[in-house]
Length: 37
Image (tube, rainbow, N blue to C red; front, top):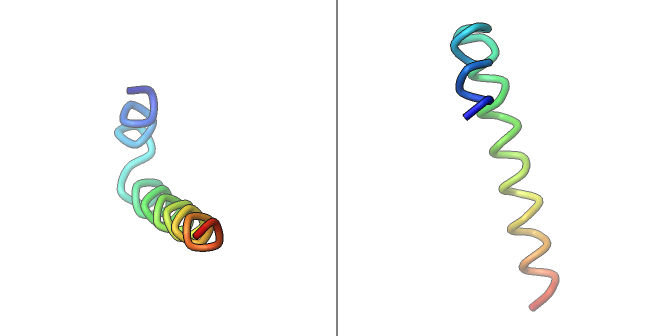
C-alpha cells in the first residue's frame, strides 16, 4: 500500500503519528455506530 511506503520513508516519528490518527478515526467510527443504535 502507498501508506506503508510513506511510513518507511518518513520513519518512526511519522508512524506513531499515523497510529494516533488511526486510533482517533476508530474512536469516531465507534461513536458513530453507538449513536446509530
